Amino acid sequence: MSGALRHSTAECGDNLENGRLSDLRDFYSLIASLAALSSPRTLSASSGRMSWPQRGVYFFMEDGETRSDSGTGLRIVRVGTHALKDSSGTMLWTRLSQHKGRVSSGGGNHRGSIFRLIVGTAILNRDNIDHPTWGQGNNAPKTIRTEEISLERQVSNVLGAMQFLCLSVPDAPGPNSLRGHIERNAIALLSNFGREPLDPPSTAWLGRHCDRERICRSGLWNSNHVDERHDPLFLRTLEQAILAMEREQ
Image (cartoon, rainbow, N blue to C red; front, side, top):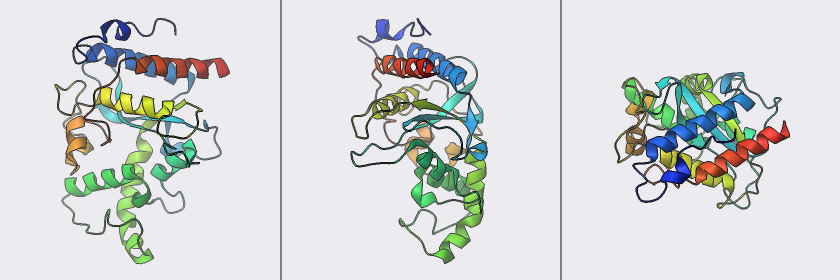
């Protein structure tokens, strides 16, 4: 994978926006290297019995959401990680399973997954459905959860069909972790919020129906960091993490 970063370090000087397209190309080149090491999975076909990195960063892609400026193939629509608090013991699969939902019922708990919450909200808005309990409170009694099960199942179907890649980054929990650094900068690089769009979402993208402006305008299922500007040097950190995975195989 040597030479994967062709542009970034040479263009990270005066105008980060002018170098964004080059950085996007380098980013997706690295994502391709990651996919070669660990093929994309789907949540619908994943379980805790599979081999998972203890800690890491995940990158979701969505059918129909393709790149139009940086190259070809599916574009990344969400970046996430876990254990960004010093006391957190959450493992990577634990976080992914919260997005996946419950196998037994086909539903899930959108109050424990912001990803599920915003996808469900977009479905409600798209279909012009009023569901006043959706997203209300941190917990809900069984009667309300039963009323929400149909929408939870729709969310599980949407998320379950998305492909994703996992990057192993086995560092300690905390806000200054390399995982957080990669997540924050990847989101900032991919985001179209408040700037000329690159690799914009399709006209049919479900996220356009979300009631959160940051999601609609960024083209990502992310709210945090979409209004920030990336540090091009984070691509070196991403490359080193992928090289470390390659050495372990």
